[in-house]
Image 1 (cartoon, rainbow, N blue to C red):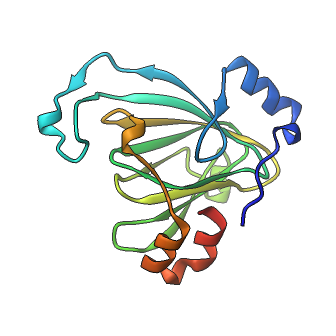
Image 2: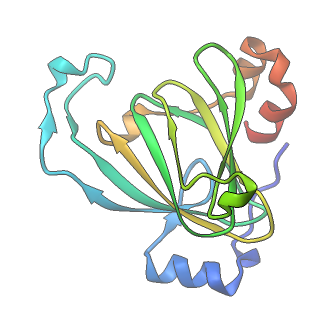
Length: 173
């Protein structure tokens, strides 16, 4: 079982980001602030999987400090993650075929980091800091994010469906 994350453990740098970017706790873990929501709407009749109209695009800042984690969750839309500053993240994904992969998001390109990664709609994913430095990233979702399209993983259900990924499921669900 994962221990609850303590905000008192944030570095001064992370506390500064929380204050200056107006970040708040996210249900999956970490901190976020919505920074953009497109004004246009995609009609619900062309998005049957979403159950209603959605804005064209949304974007957030997301900060994950060491010791915290982004728990497994999935969205009904594609999500692009962009590295802004700080340390690297390991983003774990279980795709629609049940394969587990790890994407490294960060600025150290020589070590194999990517500056952006894409998580396809319906894939389970979560993240952990790769080192000892908090990571600040941006996440863009299209069609735009709505909490009705967000599903936090149930550990027992994921283990029943993907027993071969027990170790990472126990860590991130």
